[in-house]
Image (cartoon, rainbow, N blue to C red; front, side, top):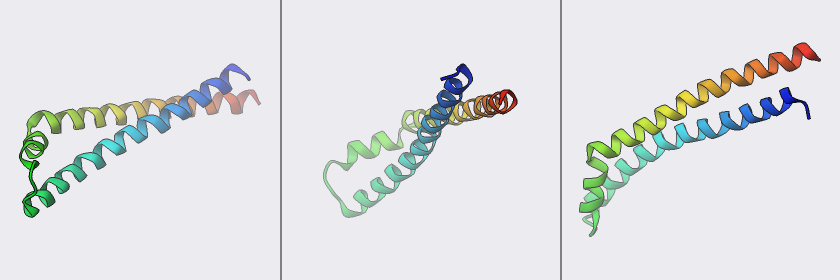
Length: 92
């Protein structure tokens, strides 16, 4: 396998992983907020600790920072993917 093809596969894998990280952080953030609201309405035991965790500033900040890193990584990996495609197309 050529060096450019290896780089292409690596960038493709990075795009997939960073994209998955960004999307899953945002989905997880929203689902946890909704689930806490559902548990609070139902009056289930043990929701107090979970609600404190979800409503703490560190929770939201950690998920948003992780999602932002995923988005930035996705953009960089996508750019590398395009560059590698151009190299392969030009050499072929």
